[in-house]
Image 1 (cartoon, rainbow, N blue to C red):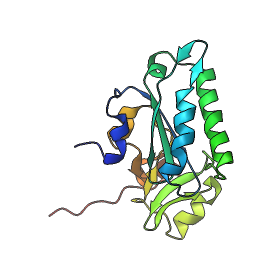
Image 2 (cartoon, one colour):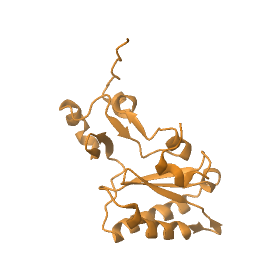
Image 3 (tube, rainbow, N blue to C red):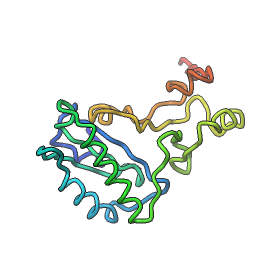
Image 4 (cartoon, rainbow, N blue to C red):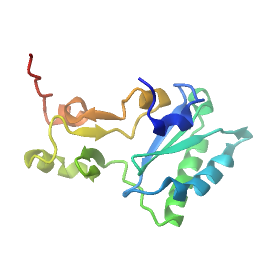
Length: 173
């Protein structure tokens, strides 16, 4: 299966490139982010090492940054600096970052965030169910993103395990 068009920015990077996914609390135009993110990644250095990050915007609200060097030579300080830069960009542009503890679910009207404390209620009222797609912002590699692991049915996630939600049984023909 070919990579989605939104992943073409990463075409030259290997599957083991380190990945960060950061969600904004509302949609944002990539053109609005481009000058800021390009500048941040263009000056991404730490202790004499130049990092070669590439980015794209997924779902109009998930900033995906990939960098190949950090997969084999991790630097917590370099990563912290880049993420601090992303927070500063969001503040300058008047955007809010989604709390990484929130759960992002794909609902008919688009991605929606839920507090973990609200999950039980959303399961009870039917807002969320076994097949609801959950967006995982904790992927570690570009290969995970390319292989479609960013989105899985709720029943196949930690939420399904915690609340003992089974995947629906498919009808056999």
